[in-house]
Image 1 (cartoon, rainbow, N blue to C red):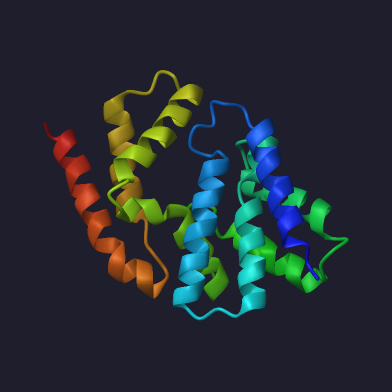
Image 2: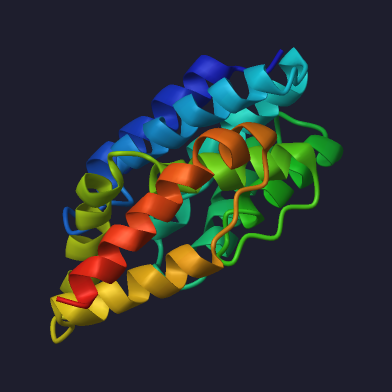
Length: 193
């Protein structure tokens, strides 16, 4: 029996208490958002309970690498996950979770249904009305590390990112892609003013 509640409590507590405050986007709230969206998508795609459990664990760990470094944080997330979970899970499950965490790398290249779900859950907000609000948290975080970046440069990065991004799950393709295109248009409009 996988002690999911203990894993959840431990990871969220660690993210809450140990992540520097300048991670205004990659904070525990983002992890909870991704977890919620992944559960929703897993339900839409009739993923079985056990795989959904592994998906939930992958969501919890997917950004823990920020506790070590921004660079290659997905790799660090996998190392933290393995250290915590290798005594508890079979190697095949560890590899599945590792694949899911690595599927959140940009650009996302998921190879399985579960990897597609976590990749979409991680960037689902791009196709929502929360795009600007959540995007501003990421902007604030990036500006912390690149203090000479301008708003115009940020918008240019957003345009390039939105043009290159794609959703992988049928639900996000249908229900998030149209709003993502509207969000892209509004950033382009702002750039052209």
